[in-house]
Length: 396
Ligand SMILES: [Zn+2]
Ligand SMILES: [Zn+2]
Image (cartoon, rainbow, N blue to C red):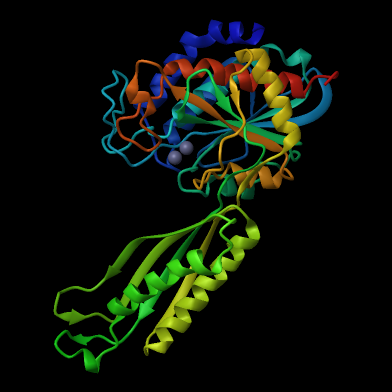
């Protein structure tokens, strides 16, 4: 409970930072003011801001008093293109952009943790790399920071972080050992036929009808080709084509997302989507080209980090505050890219943010009305700090 008390002591200061972040949300890769604020806080707390030249996002290091391992703590800092409707006094002042995924809570909690760890640096056997990641919602921020040398001064032995969970009670967390989140890739299918007059389909190859048939055919991949024990989601959220009801267009574009919990299943489906697109459209005299934008791998939490985190949670939050039986989510987080880079050592846990008596805190992620209560900062700060202290302790 000692760390929780230290977190309480910095709470009002970190709460103010959180409100400032929440008021000025910025979309992925445009987090300029957010990055500036994070830098100012870290410099004040005595963490060493690393000059890695990221356009947005930031890394900093807390050098321990003794030599040892390097542990990474990561939170994301970007907002969403949603018009906030929470009614909070510190609501977004940027129309159409808000922190509806709780990343302002993530960022502020990691700042609070940085403040506590910087004070206790003499106790650390090793260093902490603090990662304030840009562009999580765009699924490319982790990759962008890695490609610019995020780990240039050493690959961390593990990476740890959390995400807010409006479906879990405040004061509890969820730790899922093994697979926790799905992979996510984007697919773009360009269906080409032969355009012409809507009254003379016999002279055309209609890409609209081809696309309709292809969409249904692709869904049978999940229901007929896939092992039902391997969860797969294939969603096409965009169809673009045509200019008038009586004109058959030349092309139709479909854009979708594939989610899987396994890299082999992922690869097989991506190949099959392209193949079925090509074969199906050729059967009816058209053609189809597939472009895959590889996103993020599945997120896999390693058992050892989960055990250490569970122990830290028992100490900080008290017993019975950890849920371990949560089903994997088909949602994705590019935390998995950092995990993969660290040899799949580390864990992302879910931090409960549903507050009793405040139904608006249980609506869900990416919901304009959802409120992430300030009180979630306390367990967030305390747990990240306790984990780092335990992980970098000589008698672990
Ligand atoms: Zn999100
Ligand atoms: Zn998020």
